[in-house]
Image (cartoon, rainbow, N blue to C red; front, side, top):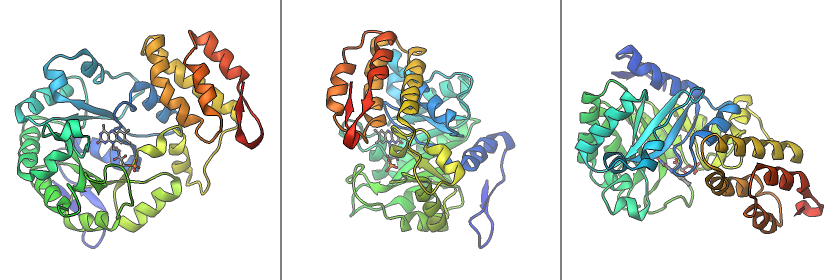
Length: 342
Ligand SMILES: Cc1cc2nc3c(=O)[nH]c(=O)nc-3n(C[C@H](O)[C@H](O)[C@H](O)COP(=O)(O)O)c2cc1C
């Protein structure tokens, strides 16, 4: 059971100790690396941790992929030393499949399991998964209830504010999952219809905090240490999710820890070293072609402040091995008006 002290937003977690130790660790981390599909793989998580990230999530893993023994899905469950504490996120629609896959996660040593009830992608929601679960709070609550019963690790749920502006039901959904034993709620304050665009109305997080007694992790447009401070202050949330704010800026966790007022901009030579390090981490995990492909988007994020990126990326796609990557990075320079050249 999780209780809130009267007149404060402090959460006191009273429950089976080991179960909630992990929830506590997530809250104590304050800034949590959010699940990001196609992005929060082991190399990216390690980069974030190198800059002080204290709690991270896998990307969403489709329960059907695991049930059908899809190799790619199984790889997403891989864990390595140094990548702890780590929560796993599942996306799905079938309660029995959720249970079977959640048990596999538990056997693999995950200590916290999150249910994705927020993914807005058409291919996901048309199959009744992700944000489609917001439309059926009873079903979502049933899934949570079963998982809480069957697992010894805490179950959390990541929700949105609703399906669209005419169906804002986050309070109902959050209360439903709380009453079934969810240990925390992640709250992306946008509707499914908004996808990732538009302003976020943070007053909804404040309202949610008033109504439920489990921790709330706020999500939506949190891009700097200042944003983190403001979100904590204005909403009383227990932790925040860092999502797009970490793309090309894994050091955002350091800025948050230090409470920096200004963004840290690495010297260009240092940035090149960070890129190299991230690439090498990919190579420990993927073959070169796969690593090059996965690093493509990261490179565009690392270099997004600079101009002429298109030309550089053309060269990047021709690299054949680490030597040619290192050569390319060595040649890479910044000229006037932040224009990149080789
Ligand atoms: C590319 C991308 C992939 C995402 N993948 C997931 C995911 O796998 N699971 C999830 O719960 N949310 C996912 N999200 C949502 C984020 O975790 C976060 O809630 C959202 O981006 C809002 O935060 P932001 O505005 O600070 O980016 C994804 C977002 C983006 C942009």
